[in-house]
Each structure stands twice: as C-alpha cells, then as structure tokens.
Image 1 (cartoon, rainbow, N blue to C red):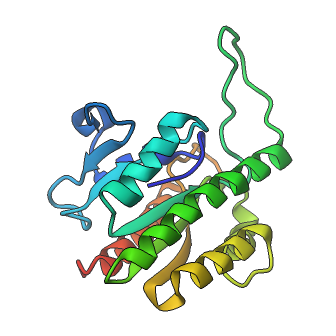
Image 2 (tube, rainbow, N blue to C red; image 1 turned 180 degrees about the vertical axis):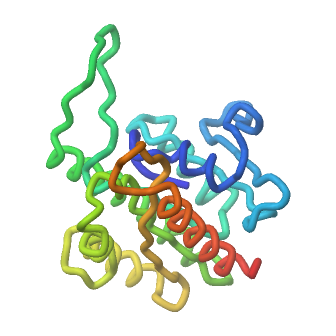
Length: 217
C-alpha cells in the first residue's frame, strides 16, 4: 500500500485487515515498511499488506525500493485523497494545520510520479501480470462528486493523474498491468453525508476486487 502522508493508509489497512493496529503492526528490523496480515475469516484471508510510509524522506524511498525491487509484491493499492490529506503540524506547534488543497494535489501528484516509476520498473521484470488499484479515500468530504472524482483518477481521463497512469501503462505494457479505480471511506460521522452502511459497501467492494485480482474469488 502506497500514498502520501495523511491520506489514511493506516486506517484503511486496519479495516481491510479486520483487526486493530496494535494487534498486528509489524516493523521489520531496519525497515520502514509496516506489515499487516489479514485476520482469518476475512474475504482477503491470506493477504499480507506492506505499507510504505508517506513521508518524502530517504526512509520512504528506501521502503519503495524494498517493496518493488528487493521483494516485489503481487499488486499495489495506491491511496489518494483528492487534496484532502490530513495536514501535518510543524514540530512544537499545536492546533489544526490549515491545508491548501492545491498544494496537497500537487504533492499527491509528485508522490504518485515517484511511486509509478517503481511500479513500472517492477512490472517489466515480472513474468506474470501485476495489478494496481487506486483507492480514492475521504469520499465523505465530496459525497455528491464521487463518480466525477473517481473518473479524474482514471486512465484516459486527461487529468494530470490520469496522464501519469497512461504513461505508466505504456511503460509497463497494458497487458502486464491492470488498473482499477475505486472510491472508499474509512470513517463516518453521526448524521454525516456517508452512512456506515455505505462506508461498508465501499470497503467490501474494494476487498472483493482485490480478492478477485489475487485469485481468491
């Protein structure tokens, strides 16, 4: 699982793995990659999630290389938030950090460009196809525009992100890389625009598709 800081990777993988973070968060010695295994009884039984930190630092780049080069994964879940990534406060400060969405969108695209290069390099080396699911999170913040936003993150959309996806498929070979784009929401607020049932439907659809891609169902 990849994506910039603040998009909700940890919370999403907790839902998909079906267990609290404290129970199964494993950091390998000398590694920035977090591992989480799916609890028995879940539709994704057998999945091992490897979560790459989102910080733009040497640890992140090393983790990307570890996941895509040293021990290549079967598929990638890349998380985006349409510019609504949670802002990180500067050390020693308090309060809510104001987030500039245009700045966040630019950072998100930069993060994806770096990650996409690793995916392309991995895909061309592998003898079998690789899958990519782009998970568009925090849809509770734009509930009336979900389809429109998902389309903007899709191949052939003509958006900056879509153009990068098109470039990735050209580099990797379209037959060697399948791409899905799905909306998802990890939390709901009482009386909010997204109900718990709708959140669960999004999560179930994501888990089902990942299970299909991995040959589980």
